[in-house]
Length: 335
Image 1 (cartoon, rainbow, N blue to C red):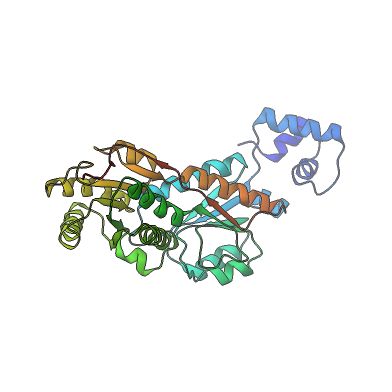
Image 2 (tube, rainbow, N blue to C red):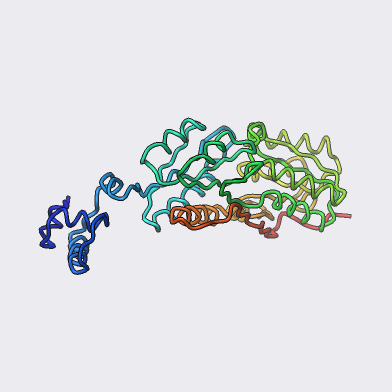
């Protein structure tokens, strides 16, 4: 392993001069700095992360707080995480992934150390218990999600209310009069998870605006749950011809369940979803969907943090408008 003494010897300077060149704590001549930088590049020297943090009062580490609670669809969460990690590396930052449900206590433990420079939080609740601490922290933070009140915070997310509206608007344009939302698992609503609540708000508002009969059904993931909710929908809404799905692992099993009950998609039943494009495209019947832009959101969240770390003002709210793509799962309602 290359040491700072090796760099100093190669550059013809003292180890303390190399340290000053790295930390910027004392002025050195441009010629000396150039020799140190060339030595570092030629030898492949990388400063120890702990020493670098002490020298600069920065750790170059971001915390990504993603409590893996019941009802969360981990593959989608990991898409956000990959985007955050990839973008952070472009800014020479690493990411510490925190997945335990530790609430305010866990956040304070991390924030009170020199372990991280800033935080990104996911799985935001409408009345999130972490909000008072976030507003009081000196370390910058960004929330992927919008609580009921985002004042004094920096939040970014897909406009999930508008996404729910867009799905219903599409079905209404096709002439559908009775629609249903098959949503996230019940525990997600019990926690008042913000994105799920906002989809319900948008779905209900658009259905009322168009004068449609509508219902909302939280649902566990899996084929058994899909069959149960499909049977319930047809029993309670016999005129049902349009369904919005906001539950990624349920999408394919739900289409299968409806078809086993005698409803063809899209001949008898049009299905829309809010989910990643690749999931909608790969379904047996490609699904009309509002894209979940996890890559874009993760990238922008890191960029907002970098600007905050640089002392630059950023907007408190960044809502990404929904983008609906028509595919084979929706059609004009049969007369």
